[in-house]
Image (tube, rainbow, N blue to C red):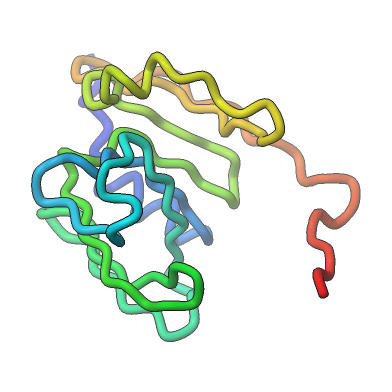
Length: 146
């Protein structure tokens, strides 16, 4: 039987490839996010070692990162117990830990206008299959906003 996939190891692997996204419950104990997100059961945060002026620590306690919210820097603290999914923008791989997903998040349906990252469930007993990486878009997905 395979060992469970460790959140820290997986996030570090994804960060080595580029940008990663963590999904967390901002209401969980030990979480520190901007005031307007404090009661949000599902906060998705992009992380990267390559962010300019980024200060980030990934250790046994969780993730601590200085991120910008509406142009204002804020040091986010996310213990591993609050993080319930991790997604790699570089590879398209994603993993979720169903036992850590808040009950009220599981009931919410995603907005139709946003693409939903594909996540594979991670059991505490075995590793579930990884989601196959998506091919890059045929054309650039960034546009200039004036």
